[in-house]
Length: 139
Image (cartoon, rainbow, N blue to C red):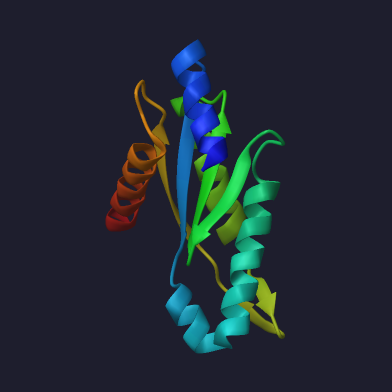
């Protein structure tokens, strides 16, 4: 949350473009039921690693809880944020993750929102969450 507050402050003060990605691992309950909780945990770790791998060194990747992650994209306009979101979706779904010799198909839904003047962490995350649910509904 501290990093998000800093990013919002930079945006408000300098007009620095910034975006937030709200990432949801699809079907975590099904993964837990099929592969056990260790399998679900391994899937979460794999997704976290792919999120870090697929973002820039100055981006911030954090797990919000459960099956949700947040990616903070400083100095990113809408086009850049959408390209990164698409790259992350493809990176995660692009190969089967192997757990105990079994392929575990992984996919994510990513909501994208830009930081707006006067935002707070709560308003940004709520908007990003709604964007993610719109992506899920469209799938």
